[in-house]
Length: 173
Image 1 (cartoon, helix red, strand yellow):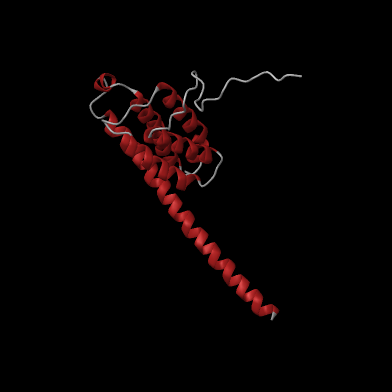
Image 2 (cartoon, rainbow, N blue to C red; image 1 turned 90 degrees about the vertical axis):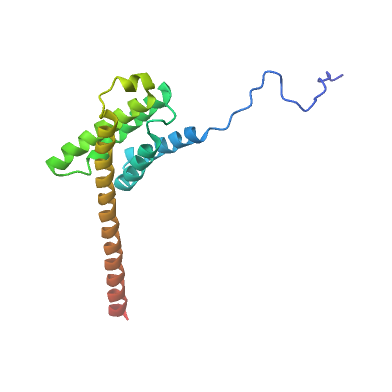
């Protein structure tokens, strides 16, 4: 039985092969924010992650920053919508909850603004961009403060656990 001969391999990829491209720094930043949003939507370190995520978002969204594509905008808006419940759940008082909700709405505004053209920006009221950042900054600062208090509570819990363990150890000895 004779084996059919295969064409000689020249070491090159097929002519129709498309080499994958490495994501740009901009694309990687978007993907990292989306990953953080998935963690927040799962209830994982909500205050801490939200504070850092909003810092990243505000650093990324400037008047001259690279624009989001429509797909990136939609993915960001969807991910923020999924995380909303956990973030707004951090705020117990009615006044803080209302401001947090306004801050969260401002996040959507920033993301939409980020994807718009300079011509679209020119049609917006003069202080639109600045006001969005102010609301997002309020939310970011308050999430940061909540995260700080959670860390204080965790350290206090750890100290209590250690003290109880030492008392138990002495009592058993």
